[in-house]
Length: 193
Image 1 (cartoon, one colour):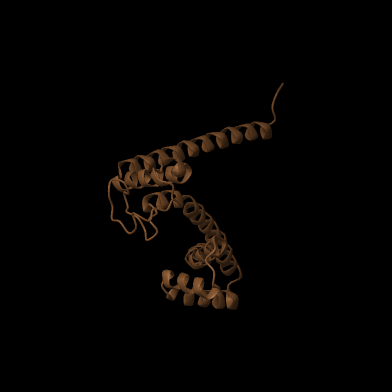
Image 2 (cartoon, rainbow, N blue to C red):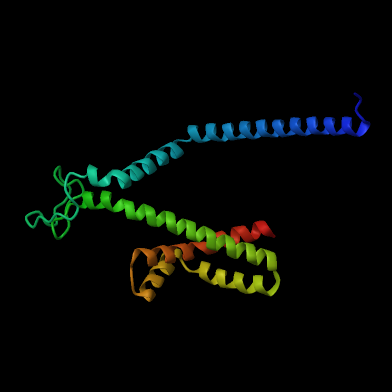
């Protein structure tokens, strides 16, 4: 059984292709390992991971961790400062502030995640469209984004909340997502161009 020259060349090309792919995969693994090694040595990264882990743990198991129910009223302990009984003090109705912060972390983390996803999707879409179509469309959209970006983000978000007149979770997610989308849109547009 003999192989034609074309079959031999195909086998050699397939073997070379597999070798190149495996070498590229090994190089990617090596680069990834180096990046993780750099991160592990970075003190700020380690502290950040610990803090994020604590907050996520508090968000998931917060109701079981707090010593006092967050909605429990104690009119004998109103406006108290931090103490051993109330770690963050109490509010004007005598509710434990620490319990309210820990239990309140769940909706905040969910809202932050949803707003980040929304801002990323909207910003990426705008950036891709402006980078692809260019011309007048790009000019008009980017000037609008420049005008939005000229205002401080926090002031813009507060103005939008005041204009809408409600502070539900959905409205907050929408406003935060849309306020941060110009930043992502500019980055994606620059990449597309």
